Image 1 (cartoon, rainbow, N blue to C red):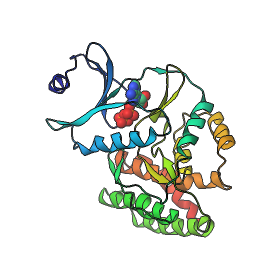
Image 2: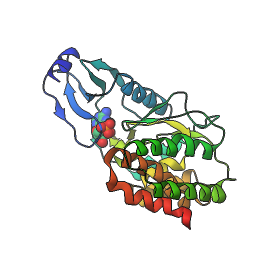
Image 3: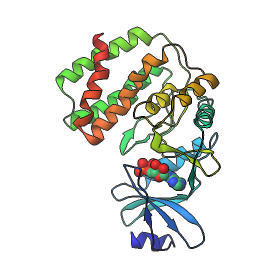
Image 4: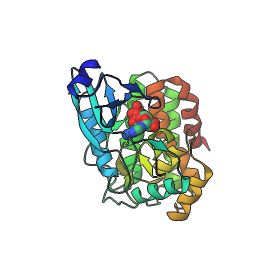
Length: 277
Ligand code: ADP
């Protein structure tokens, strides 16, 4: 770490920042200006390239930290960004900003490159069909990883097939537009700057159904009802959105099952059980 700071011409006092669960993050300074430094010892330089690219996409519509330098140094991947002093803000403004992202339309579902969801690969092969994209690029990629990590039982596979049938039967004929997604929209990945402007960080972008971001926002808390109400007022979701949230939360739950283990198994099973209804 000392060596990395020297390499980046920063002073040696690095203040660790809590909140992220994937990377090591620090507030650092060069004596004049503060920066936000993220490091990951076991990842290659392209890990933060994906984050830099994702932030550049979001920047078309919302406030993100500027990115200054990224790469790897002695096997540590790093990303040096603008330090944004956190402040207080309004959930209505957050909803308005998210809706700006969701007004950016794509021609297909997917993205020009694969990227990462946490530390796991996120595959973005383009597709014209939302449900095909969601099942093959999202759920089944994570299920394959779950297999490899011994989290996928024969029972889960059986329940998953019923779940998939159920989704196609219920929602298969409904069409959705591809829009730019933050992709990992939990409360730790957004905050307000000192002027109350919402800031978006740590994205896993792709073009998808915008209810994915709403589903993630509702999975672990941290957003007030006012957020959803304002979002609905600005950019109303199609009928049935409340019912579809659990379908989309399954992706994030599978990612958590793969990263953190069986403590997320019951939540995964509860969503899979929708197929039996
Ligand atoms: P991780 O990839 O480990 O999840 P994050 O990028 O989410 O790390 O950052 C961790 C925390 O640091 C966030 O929850 C956020 O509150 C804060 N943070 C992120 N980016 C900045 C920044 N540019 N300036 C100040 N604080 C930030």
